[in-house]
Length: 300
Image (cartoon, rainbow, N blue to C red; front, side, top):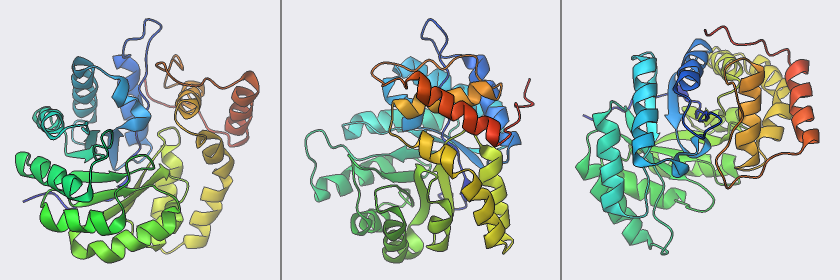
């Protein structure tokens, strides 16, 4: 029976690289501990982890590191999407073999797949693996709510959706309504619409990894019936989320800079192509971190 119990906040890990461009396993282990100690219910390796820039061997290193370091303390979701069904199945089976609790998959879009082809794509992957699939709905690989709901009805393991196409809140509401009991909704988009998503039926979100304690506090307050307090804490962090949410590339640098300032990462290296922020933007993110009094991590 597929695991349909996942809820909460699942930060998407930044991928640390050393000065030779290799995955910094030590820093990745520290990030896992940092997020779990901050209250994360799960962890993800996905687009914000630059997974599309990793070799297959590096995917194995990253997945193994996160699974072993989490040691059952948090669920692990690995993005296994590719431009063909066979390759997606290969990546998904490997993630399953290495201990991942779920996959997250965008549809193949390079050749302009039709809705029927996308449905067949998810069905093939679902039939080939034993762990859940998060259907990822992003701007350049959209899975509109009616299509996501149809996929979930046809493919047993494709029972989660990560919805992050603008306008996010109405799209979450539509996916929740159309998906019914077949489709479990998470939000994305950097966590910028966390509370709006919860109000509309989302059971979790997949935000940036650099402020886990805030997302856990907002989650707890909201589910304790203290929505006003949840909003107050969330709104205090909006300048940080806004600055991080400037698009892939620059966001990779800035998320890593926050993790560096908090003592988790040693570097902010990002794989090319990616747009580095200018000095003023780095200074702005540093001032926000200081203003929020984000303490250095306690992880060794």
